[in-house]
Length: 235
Image (tube, rainbow, N blue to C red; front, side, top):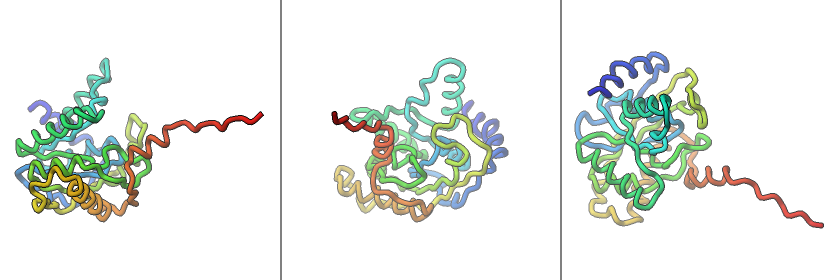
């Protein structure tokens, strides 16, 4: 209840007054029942503005690193993230990935909304990248619809690497729910999972008109972070 009050009575009105967010397609979010909101990912602020503009509470799976800060700043960050409905998860892979899946299924099992970024990480350059199949497996196992969401201009107010946002206007476009019930029982089939997530990415690209790149965003980030190897000298 305390976090609800902070979000809708204290933080929410202030953020809306400052950034004047707009939304198209809010009616596509069901009034009741579980669903996955699949969003492109341009900025950390995506996880703030989308829950803020919905009439229902929702949760986002957020990397646990965001919750590990120390001192007053770390406490304030954790408080803000929890108020926005974010749940810390370990994204190191292996057993951690399975735990993340189970956490998401628990949220959906309670009849709630769950936000997921199919790309797995923020876009390094504003383009839309290949989706990972975790969202497809979750949708099929939970038997829930997937609602595509396109965030607009959030990277303008809070680019990667910035700690404080600039003042600007952001928006979001919510598409019609995608029904994958035809794939019931195939949540263990990697070809079906790839087909499902590709359909989600096609819809995101259509709604937002982002340039699509059929590689993982994390691979692009890794290549950019890798130092150039100096050529060997020839004596």
